Structure formats: structure tokens, C-alpha cells
Length: 207
Image (cartoon, rainbow, N blue to C red; front, top):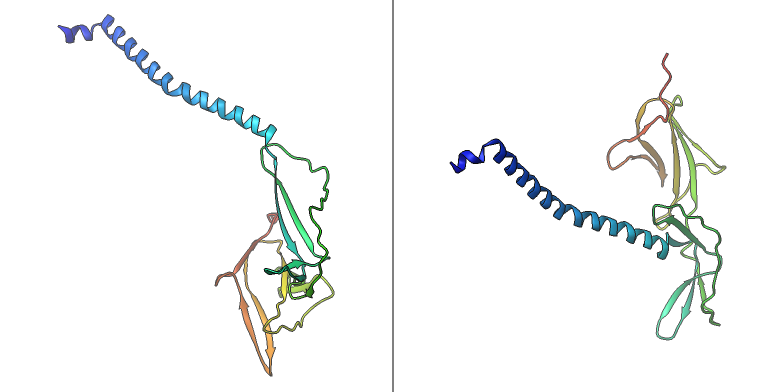
């Protein structure tokens, strides 16, 4: 009889209502803490926006010679006057940040001098354009300087190549020609054994 009463209409409603109440209680017991934690996280984020620095900054010293200074217990190399500091700033949060000024503060100065070392100057960059659509494809200098260049064992040449095509998806490689002590040859330049790949920015208009 107990089983039959369980499936009676009134009993079914009573049972389902009890299950619904239990399910709702279980849901609320899980959902309310999550809602509270989400609200607390949003409040903390708003507080952080008012207390933390919203800018991330990185720096790199470039184009430097060094002055070698003897500090007694150690010898240090200090970037010489005329070097460059590259500063990169980016926003640290969801809101845009306006950079309004840049100021300098001297925190210490010592009356000392040393020997100048010029070994660390930055290598100049040669700029070229790669024209994939030319017939035949060619490399063209973007400044007065052009090949040939001479390099030794302790010397480098740095080339920046701007690659251009107006049609399609192009795979390509470079060949660097060389001569040395009466010998000549070519070195294939690619991307880890695979051709470079360049696609046109705009679709070619239909004919």
C-alpha cells in the first residue's frame, strides 16, 4: 500500500514537490557561494583598478659602448654616454591608459672615470624589399646601400626584408650568393627547411 500511495496523484505531487525543494536547496547551497565569490572578485578588481599601477613597462639598453670602471672589489662595464634606452609601455588592465609625461630622476652620481670599450655597438640593419610578383621575382634595396657586403668571422650583416605580393598564396625561398678566395657558391635561405609563405592582403578581383 505504501508503494501504491507513492504513485497516487496527490502523493506524486507531494513527492515531486519535496524533490524540487531539495533540489532547489542543493542548487542554492552551491550557487550562492559562487555568486558571492564572483561578486567579491568583481569588487576586488574594481578596488585593484584604484590602487594598482595600470601600466606595464619594460626597458632594454641599445646602441651601447661601455666604460670599464674599477670599483676596487670588482670591475664593471657601464653603458657609455650616448647609448639608447628603449622603453615599451602597455596597459595592464581592461581600461585604456593615457601616458601624459616622462620625467627623469638622478638617484646617485659618483666622480669616477674609466676606459672606453667600443665592442658592443649595435649592428646596422640593411633594408630590402622582396617583390614576389615581379618577372622574375627580385630583391630590391630600400636605401642607397646594396650588395656586395663583406663579412669576417667576427662580423655580421643584418638584413630586414619587406615581402610583397598582390595575388595568391606564395611559397618562396632566398638564395644568398657568395664568393671567397676565388670560389663562388649560393646558400639557400628558408624557414627551418621549409619555404617561406606569403599571402596577398586583398582577394584578387573577379574577372
